[in-house]
Image (cartoon, rainbow, N blue to C red; front, side):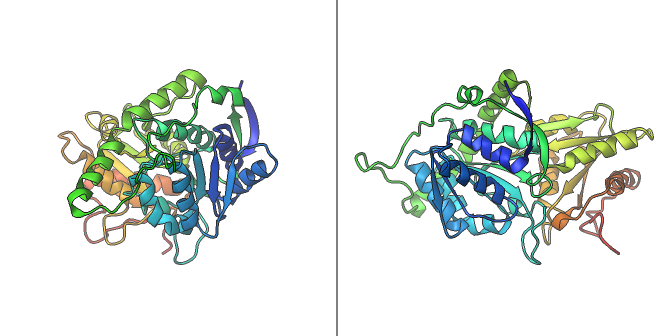
Length: 398
């Protein structure tokens, strides 16, 4: 039976990797994800986890070791953040193109410059098109659960793709939460041994990662695109099995008090719980508002999003990005959502706001402001994405 424990979220994620019985951990310390790999290193040193912990000199090498180990048939885990992920970038592309199902815990943190160790989503948005399955957790329980599910999803023979679990730096990484931690025996029945389709073996040699001449490169990329889109049914299956086994249900898109809502705020990560508090606050004032959580980032849940936002009472969607798309329209999430709904005849108006950059606090008053922006757009029929203000930053000091 799962026991509820007061545990740091980073340690809970490390425990999930231990319970998955990983064979190889390769990582480099970087704030704020360091506690994850420190704990795993201690577990290996103490003999609690029978795994190889590969000490490397950089995140670039850490991901290189992960890809090599996975290609050899090992179950592999890593963790990083911010500049570390940026340094990994070259090999992050290789992990997905070689179909190596590495699991990575990404402690979301802002990118330099200026130097910032605090939370926003600029690191993960920089990796949007690398071909990884990407899922967001909004609290410690979700971070633990989703890490377990990541192994099932990525290693499924119908998928064979790497998976990153996003959770907010400091807001979650260093916070102690009451989390239900499963007994090891319960997880052993949920995560089967890893059985790769191909593996590097001197006795049975295969070629992985050859040169992609123009005659084959396009077809290889098409196969990747098909693979990540076809991972969606497997993601849903794993979510459903987890719900049946353990009682907690996860969906690609979650809604909160949207049944009769006219204005909704869409967000990712830990801010969604604060947004729900703002919804309750405004509902007490008679406002018809709601919140939508975009949990699955890649593959993008087009159908789920349309079902949540179109053909009902919702007239205005305010998308909260914690990343600026420089020179574009607000942030990446807003652009994706607006594009996804473009052809829907009963689509709501979509407006983007940016907040919480570099770890700046988003108080209740700023969430209220976001809903007010949505209401103003409804009244005027004009979005802040039009001239003269292209990027609406909430909480910007005057």
